Length: 222
Image (cartoon, rainbow, N blue to C red):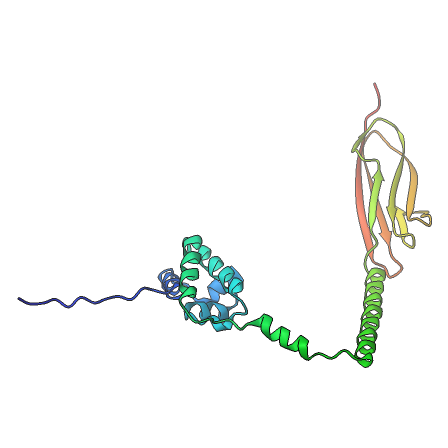
């Protein structure tokens, strides 16, 4: 009696399953990277079961789920398989908490260290304030129209009101409008029957400009 030799297939790892699914869809690593926003080196590490490339278990688990969803696989099932698979492998991730503990134990706090940290903090605050001030000064001023709040009115004479930067220059249909210290402006206008257009501009001293266009329909009371 002749015996048949049956090939025993080893269980596929999560990485191998994902790799085969990708190849079946004829997708390159670069295409997957662009679609999932997961860097190519991490995708290659997942497919090769090289878990030391990742900083933590949660980190790689999230990538595995995202990769599975993109390939149309059951990400929940794949995640459970990965957890079981990882439980049977040697710990791949470094014990970050233990390393940090050793560093803290070796850290000696001295007056010089305290002064150095304080000096760095002051410099960071000053630089941050300068950057914030320059950005605020160079960007276009805010512009908000508070009245009228509807496009249809039944009054011929109305007042256009709004808020902007206190240092801004405001124009309504190219006519200057005064701005108070709080950045509030108002201008009385006389409407004509039908649709009226008003272009409101707020300009900074550097020429940055914000613009809003009001479309007001004036309907006289019958």
